[in-house]
Structures are given as structure tokens and as C-alpha cells.
Image 1 (tube, rainbow, N blue to C red):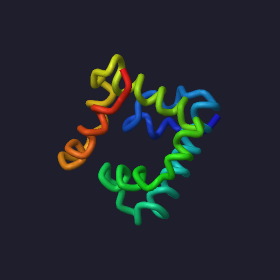
Image 2 (cartoon, rainbow, N blue to C red):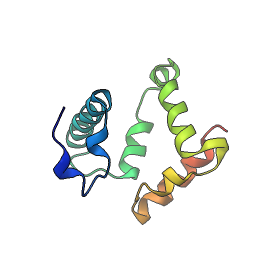
Image 3 (cartoon, helix red, strand yellow):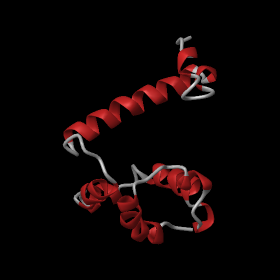
Image 4 (tube, one colour):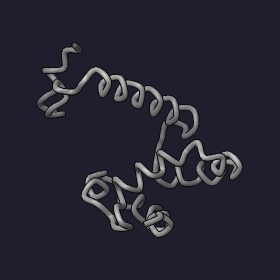
Amino acid sequence: MTKLNNLETIAPGISKLSPKELEAMHEFTLLWTLFEANVLDTNASAGQIADKAQEIDPEIINSGWIDDHITYFSDRYFPEGKQSYHFDRLNLRRSDKGVLRPIQQKVPS
């Protein structure tokens, strides 16, 4: 098991994660770092991410590969079409919230 006890003060519960959860966390961290560095010029914001999403070929989106992910995020952040506690805890910058309002309105309920 990975030693994470020293991180407990800033991330309570991290030492109790399963190996599968730790692997997912490590993969996400690596992928996010690469995405932010290579796609967003090391300066991520909701606006930049929304702009990049608009550049994706609709054929790729419509192919269905992202459907499970959209369902997960919709259920987590906008269950029944309403903003959730999880969304409120994202610690978005004030300018990011304005970018996300139009996106929220498109979330399927």
C-alpha cells in the first residue's frame, strides 16, 4: 500500500483509498497535467476548456465514446437537472462560473 499518512492533514481519508482508487487518482493526475501543459499552455480555466471542447469534431462526440462520462458528470454535478453540493465544492473562480452557466442549461435532466 502506498504510504499517504503524511497527506491526511490536507486530504483526509486518502490513506484509506483502495489500490484501484489510488490508480485512478494517479492516472487522472498524470492526464490532467499533460492536458493542461499541452492543450491549455499550463494555464487551465473553465473558459479555455469550453473553447477546446467546441473545437472537437462533432462526429467524435456523437460516436458515443463519451456518453458514460457525460452521464457520470451530469449525475454528480446536476442530478435531476439541479446543481449539486459537489458542483458547489469545485472552488471555481468567479470568472469560471459565468462560462459554465450556459453549459449547465444544456445538461440533460
